[in-house]
Image 1: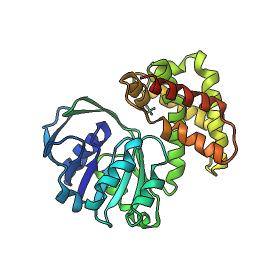
Image 2: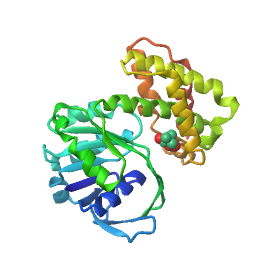
Image 3: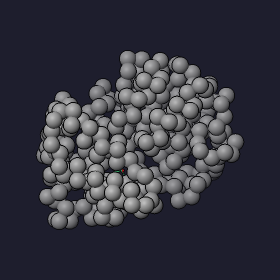
Image 4: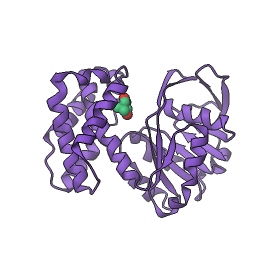
Length: 293
Ligand code: PAF
């Protein structure tokens, strides 16, 4: 397939490399001006891939958008004139809330949402390290995308495990819950994920999870607080040495994804008239840090 990766950061570069090795024709779209970009995964030979090639974008069957959530709408708005109406758009990022604006912007295109637990790290602009095996789930957002379940097989062949999820919102809400619990706390305290296993964070984590469960129930998403707590504790444990993406953003004074993580939760809570004071306080704390720069 012809696949364009929009926003080749760590996860985008990882998929670019694996999809290329599986035989697909890969091009990139990035903020860099160069006509080609190099991606070298682990110790495999470096690849040279076309960058910002409008012809490649026009002929893309699949557009895998791995931009951070805050950039999705503006970048897709910019490149929309070069995107075929039949191209399948896949959004893969932390947080929720972008699908609504992409559906308004590109109502004709099949729209798929993805969530992945693979670990990837970019020690330099050309290198990507696959730091942890994970699972990727894909699912349809609009009716046109209901015919796209074959993508699970295509992506699985490149980088397993990949499954098609009949209710991708369920999977995304579980990931949102993980991000609501881990990201703001690690960013505010500037600690690795594993530090959250310390007893001093327990009460706060429980309060976050409790509030997220109320909102999930109101959104008619199946949720079990005990199971969600186990999932979050498992992620804290399995990623204990990692700095979360929000910790990194705050450490480097980059604006974070808070509006699409805790901010999305607050928006849903307000739609249902639910009080979420713990998450509200974390949201405010991150915003205050961002505004202090
Ligand atoms: O945003 C992140 O860093 C990741 O989604 C997660 C799962 C919290 C691990 O660091």
